[in-house]
Image (cartoon, rainbow, N blue to C red; front, side, top):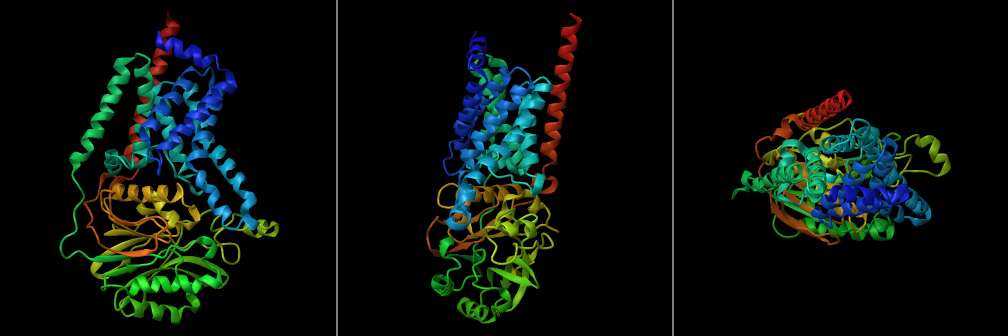
Length: 505
């Protein structure tokens, strides 16, 4: 039997051999993430991960294999994480290998725990997929959360993105995992169970486009200008280059006709807002009556904030938003006063021990354009930061400085998650990035126009309208969590009854 032969082959590899196989499979699974986009490889790799789990004897072996698979996966998917430490090699370079290793192993612990619990509860396709999905939900919440590179993100570039409007990233992750496990069973000749599961997923894949495209901009849609200066992070605060970079943004602001809104990226204003009066006057003059959104830093006593500022058509400061979800060890350091004595400071901080968090999500009145939900960089990764808004916006407004993420995978993965937020909420997004990718995204998560990575320029784009609120916009992760709880409970109950039947024999 193919099933028995596969089990014997895996079992013969031993503890370290199985771990090596799982680590390699995890690394292969990561190739479905942007920019590689090999999502079928992800499904195939998870089939192998489930196969190793299915033959694991005891929960300790299942934990060990989950740790190996997760480490391989996150080491590849988050390989960009070393890039911020290489901006200032003399100061932070020594941290780069530790950051990658600790991140990969630390996040893999969630998979290890999920596989251990699944084995203790009897294993099986449903329990494995449910618990691994729930472990990803926990990874996105605990210790401020880091829901980057979830397995379901590999489907962002496929028609399956539509189902994020129903169950968000968790539903997509469950679909990837259950497809992998079903493929394993189908390969081993269990055609009924594996074939049925894959048939359902295939139907969902084919049915997604039937939902129709997002609403299109009308002839009188507002025109938004994205400004992308393409400033290398190593030069961003260098006095020898700051004026040239600022002048470049001013040229892009003044060029061509006058749009309805101009958007500069995160921390695009040199210096602090507290002393930027003349700079803001110059920007307003270059905008020729158009409102401008700017990324700027500001101080309030000893506290510093990473902020988004709206200048109205007359150059007045009409709205200010302070970023509230900060990057640990990037924008602030936990126990900063203590660790600062040892030279450990946040990568992005300019003074003190990092930024202070703002009061929370808010909406900004953008006049004729409607209301905007402002997001700064990292906040676009969190669906809960979008859901925390006090009301429904007409569009999301994200400014970011992806120069921190290098030129390989990080910027593209960040962009993919912006697309996911739009699909979840049924809201368009304006995304201005320092080095790219700047883009306008419609309410279905599709990019309507962009400025590529590493390019300097500007782009005038019609703002797409919002779609009606999606199920995810109304209920968040609860429908997906309810489905996972139901499926997990039924699977655990069936396993218990099966064991009771065996004991009676």
